[in-house]
Image 1 (tube, rainbow, N blue to C red):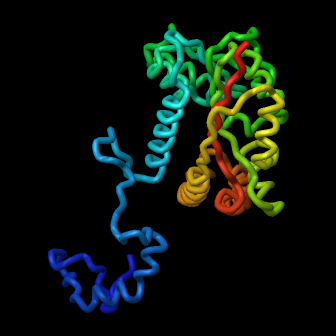
Image 2 (tube, helix red, strand yellow; image 1 turned 180 degrees about the horizontal axis):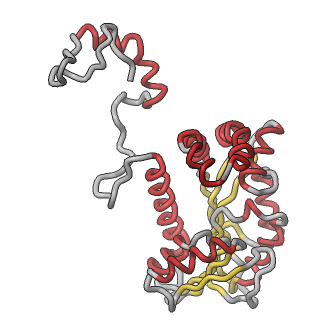
Image 3 (cartoon, rainbow, N blue to C red; image 1 turned 60 degrees about the vertical axis):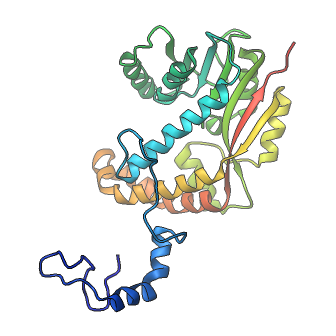
Length: 301
């Protein structure tokens, strides 16, 4: 917070040795620094915002906790979208299941049986550890699996989702065709995907491909064309770009804040690799990266 003109920190008359500011001093601070406050606090009202709704369990008090809360909200929202109209005891596939939290939540919320796949052995171990404490060992399983070459029979699943996995694929059309193949007729695929907006710089594109371990993002038109060519019908499209814009900001701030801890854990080579990428990634997310939810349907018959 900016100090007032007399050098007081504005801590109030109850603080020992720190007289409260005069009204004129408060006014002078806002006259001089009000616009600065709006740049770091938000200019809608110049008061603390409700980042966490009342009644949330274990409300976060830091940026990383807020990021966790946002991920949990996203998971709940995606469960709501995919679960509408699912049959009882649905067979569900999580393509790119990460560390297993969303797959477990999907099983809890729907009552279905969920299979999650990942190409990360470390993630797979985390999945199994989570599953062991979930009480869902009979309804959830995890396996090592390639999204572009799924090891399941045709029509094995009632529905599937792929949360931020498709961006990693070197052959997205192959991933879409495989998802279509393992779904029953009328089955649905919920996916999230990035799309390029405008013309990012080479540094911005490079930051995305290296930080995300992905090919460069395509245009939304290219994505929709590949979806149609794979054989899916688009049932729903939702623009969620504001989320990736905020995510880019938060990632950059948290990286700078926790850089020393990151270097201590992962070594100087990791920070030397990441340091030059964070700012162009941030500007890419802000200016050139869209983010979409798409609910796709496999035709009947």
